[in-house]
Image (cartoon, rainbow, N blue to C red; front, side, top):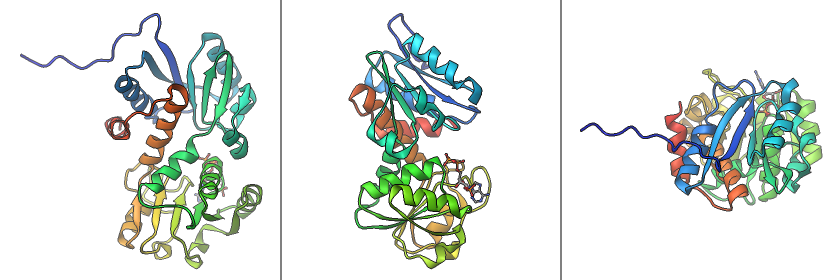
Length: 278
Ligand code: ATR
């Protein structure tokens, strides 16, 4: 007899709605990860993706509020703009200046940021951060979260960016160092390197020359498509430990679910859902 196809249970009147808001939405793997987690935790909830252009963000938040949406993941390009629609920001969202998670607590929408936890835990899978010399490539929203996380865990952090003024502003605000453009990595000793630029996203290019990578270091690429970027391939060849952006996404999603439910779903299960969603 053929096996019955596996399907999610149909939504019920009690089913909670969660969603990711982003624009464009074609590449998101958040629904795959979150729905797998809901199923594993036995939660009566469903997670959808909504493509919300920037000029519709306020309406989307008003709609989510009216409908009692339980939790929202906030993705590109809304992470900074969405803060003003929250009733409250937690300490990390406030410090980072970006919100990637909004959880309804009673009738209040509370903004948080779990991106930094994803980066920190992805790196900590391979060793401690405290005392490390870390370099962050990029100075956008992801760089802010990663720099915040690394500093909080006790690393010394240098920020490099194509546009150096942005690196200097970010570093000054968060308490890191800024030393120059991406090409200056070769002048810096480092134990940890995190790429938060979009270089390498669906393209065969690295943000830094292979010769700048150090044996024995950890290299985390926030770019997750392709799974092995040129930066990660070069890192492996240089004797560094490559860490794919998948883990950053999986670990930040686990923290989102913990913020709402107090329960932590199994990471391997989310990682498998992420892989299947390609
Ligand atoms: P996110 O919110 O994901 O961090 P972002 O705020 O748009 O995205 O930041 C993108 C980062 O990628 C920036 O650091 C950007 O460098 P600039 O500040 O100089 O723009 C970096 N970036 C994008 N394209 C790049 C490229 N071709 N070369 C080098 N850096 C690039």
